[in-house]
Length: 182
Image (cartoon, rainbow, N blue to C red):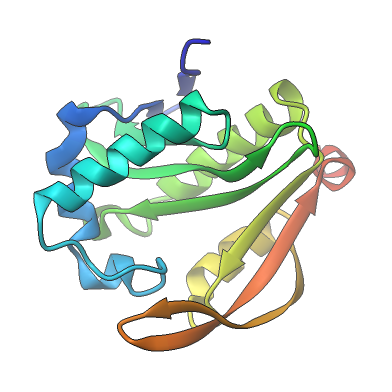
């Protein structure tokens, strides 16, 4: 099964391969990017290479899909977005994303999420897309709520990051809700 490349007005969502290791490392080495990511910031390129290999393996095993967010105007990888915990049989997954801070507040994440939700509900025929978000990550919560995600509850002590346990909200969007907003 070939990797699904998706396109929006300004973006191309592509397979992340080892040639993107520098971009992924740079993005995940920013403290402000990883503070709500559930992992510490990257300090070694090997961490990015390992993550890329995990993305490849998850896709091969049909457990996830992770796209690189590439700007059409300059071909630069500015972030990634994808489906974690993909369960085609149960028709569900969790969405996750991160963006290079230089590109925040430009609508790129919204544009990419819109297309991935469309692909997830229309082409993969998923029924539920979940999200796990730190309560402090207000921009991400607002973004997901803009798409119709509903806050379902608080997962206490869900992530351990920098030797601390963190609570997270769990949110979801169901296919009928997505279709209604149409």
